[in-house]
Structure formats: C-alpha cells, structure tokens
Length: 250
Image (cartoon, rainbow, N blue to C red):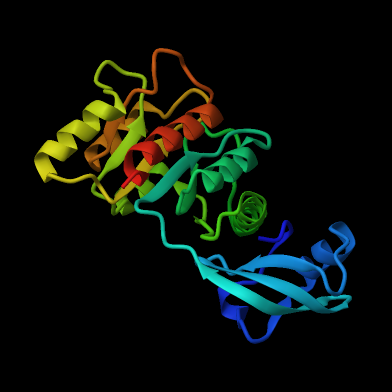
C-alpha cells in the first residue's frame, strides 16, 4: 500500500471519482509534495480504503483513480472513552492515542475538577478541533475507522447516557478491582465477553465523590489501574490498552 494517506469523507466518497478536498489537497501537494502519477492511499473513515493514482493535481482539488479498493472490517468490540479534559494539550495526545488503540467514540468531559471550562461556541470549536486530531491520527496510523468525538458534556450527562452494559470507571479506592477480575465476573454471569465497553477516566485530582457516586449509580464498575497513581493521560492510554487487549482478541 502507498505510504501517504489522505481522507475523503464518506459523504464525498465515490470510487469512480475520487477527489481530495481543499485541506487534503493542500496536505497532498504542498506538504507531502505529491505530484501527478504518484500513488497514494485514501480512506473514507468507515472502513473503506483505496490505493489510487493521482491523475490531476490543481490547487484546491486533487483527482485520483482508484486502482484497488479494500474494506476493513469493524473491530470486534466497540470502545467508548469518557475522558475528563486535562489541562494543556494533553487532550490532543489522549485523542490521538485513543484513535490508535481502536476507540470508536471519545467523549470529552467537563468535570467539577476540570481546569479547562468551556461553554457555548467554544464547545463546538473544541469538538471540531479534536475531530481533526482524530483524522490526522487515522492518516498516520493506518486506522480506517474514524472515531467520533462527541460534544463535551458533564460527567452526570455522560453516565446517564451510557448505553453499554459493560461500564468501567478508573478509581483509586479499596472497592476497585482489576479488569481481569471484573471481566471474569461478567463472563460467569453472561457466558460471553462484552462486545462493547465504556471507560470513564478522571481529571487531575480525580473525580469528586459526587461524580464517582453518579457513575456507580449508573452501573459503572470501579477498576484499579495498579498501585501507582497515574496521570490522567497515562490512565486513559493504559485503560484503553488493557481493555482492547481483552476484548479485541476474538
């Protein structure tokens, strides 16, 4: 498969007439220095990828001829990450790594201890920015299924809206158990591995007791991430890694 990868949204995807939009054309021509005749890869974020050849290259539009089209199956488990927004650019890192680890949905959370507070238009702008981070991560890592970045919301709303039956919250408490122990109990009760999971990760300083209570009341099981207290971004990467390892190997 060609080295350079570019994105065409599913709504604009036409294998008989593949055209990069303005932003992707700029990346293709001005950043990656691709030219007519070069072979590249394009994907639509819904599992379809094509090896293609550039047939016309003009500013704002790059036309491609599909040479071979492949369909990547959906991951065997659907993972949703509810992540309290950390300070600085750490949310960008979390979203990038969550994409690489196969998350299907990423919901930024505004917890009571979140340093970054957003409202109104800022929420939508951040959501758009983070969705672009997801697309760039997919281009770099070869992921053909683009995760959805949700609109930032409160912990209370996220826990109430969680629809997966297998729900986990990273917790520092005596009641927290390992993921393996929690999965073992699930397996015994359901005679199968869960096909989806929701992970809830707190901010610096963890969730407030009230937020933890909301999660537990909504059916989230407290899990331990080990004896060492992890930074928020490390906790997210670790939790997604071990959960994906357990649920994706089918």
